[in-house]
Length: 165
Image (cartoon, rainbow, N blue to C red; front, top):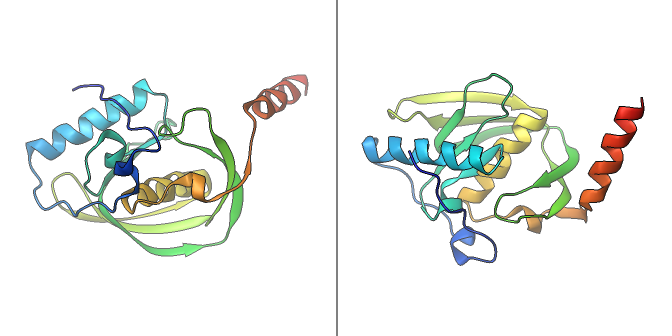
């Protein structure tokens, strides 16, 4: 496994629609493993293949709550519901945080690393992370969805308030 360089905005790689994965082989397994190592090293919760320079429909999400890593190959959103605004960041936009409106619920069909199909339903922050990564596969970047830029100092203020309670 290897820690790879994360592609940063304004690279044109980030705005291209990715190709479907057709071969489910050792190369794909290595890509997924390297993406995981890279995401963990960068302290992220998700990573899409274009963020490491690979224009294929592969993304991972790991909220670090003891759940398994979600590996999505050729994901397709089949249902969404609700709506909420919350703060997002992105490994390709270091230091940029903003309020983004996304569905509260998502259902996705995707493939495992062995090519088998599966369906996943997620809500709240997990749904947000999944949709953020799928957007990357379509060349859609979170900065185009920001309703309000959030200063990182606001996070510190919230942390201080929570500690005081």
